[in-house]
Length: 459
Image 1 (tube, rainbow, N blue to C red):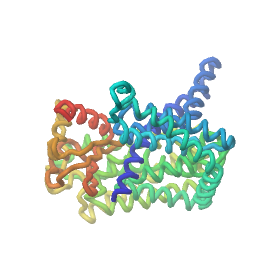
Image 2 (cartoon, rainbow, N blue to C red; image 1 turned 60 degrees about the horizontal axis):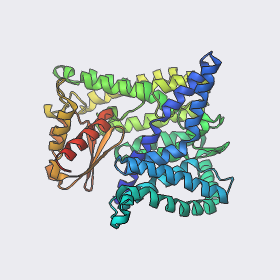
Image 3 (spheres, rainbow, N blue to C red; image 1 turned 90 degrees about the horizontal axis):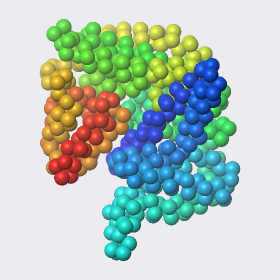
Image 4 (cartoon, rainbow, N blue to C red; image 1 turned 45 degrees about the vertical axis):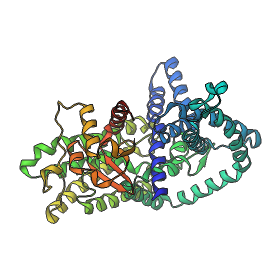
């Protein structure tokens, strides 16, 4: 359980630097189509720079994420990455481990922060104590890490390339398995860890690793592990929302209309699917199994048809359009997506009706439905969430990823799920001493509000 929790925390932290990558995609796309050479050249240079320094961005983002948002940890991550990479290249000049080096630097920096940020030194050296000691210790640790990475780099790079090639050798069937497994891991939060390996590390082309980085570097064999997501996120899941709305009780349709519309738009515009998935994951798991099967089949079909497409963050409509110029047979995704929209809509409606499934609007208790008044502020919601989690004294730590609050608590019986649903929670994933509260795309903003309230009370 502890190992899984660490993987979940790493996955959430890895989303911090990945969230900036769509900017690179849009900037590159604009640079490719604008007819003004001076502007287009600047945009292309800006996009290329973001990709060039992806290792540094990952180091800083992972460090900040794992250290609970502390800026000094991110600063240390940058220092550790630069030193470690320089030392490693002095030993093995041909080693290209940008992403992996970033991950190592980020994790190391976070660990150093957690260990040394309260260090007390003699009064004469007190200026270098506390948080200021973290980057200093990090600089020395980076030298040692660089020596190890430089010595083991060639073997490590060869091993990662072989592992990636083995997975990619599965072709369309490998992509289909990945698509299904990635959805299957959604409840645990471990899908981020799987994504990190496939999208950032698997395979190698022109010094770039991972299906994502290789796709944007022009690898003709990359994009098969991303293209299948577009049909599901742009068409399938929005259609599932429509099906659940149509199958809601007449008196409940008004209550869930906003929820379903928001979830559908979030999937379509941003590619973030958890607000949709958690609407039926626990109350109607048979629908989740159908969703897994359809997702895997989409990746499989895209692979069989030779469709390659990619994204920097997630498969939303903006990235579909921005990266279409790099895609192969990307327009086929539209008719395929319409087919999946029909499959989701009619299968969901049929199963909900025949099996009397408890999707939103069909739940037995009205308290199970999220109730949010438009006049309620985010601070009010944050206060209510703290109360629903058992109060300040029941909270050990609180973190977030794109769509979830991750909370470590003292006593499980103090957590009121009904109260949290009234705050807008879409679902819950419980672990040993930890609960994940799915709040949708507002999760990170809520985390900041909750932390501000807790610190104001002396935490």
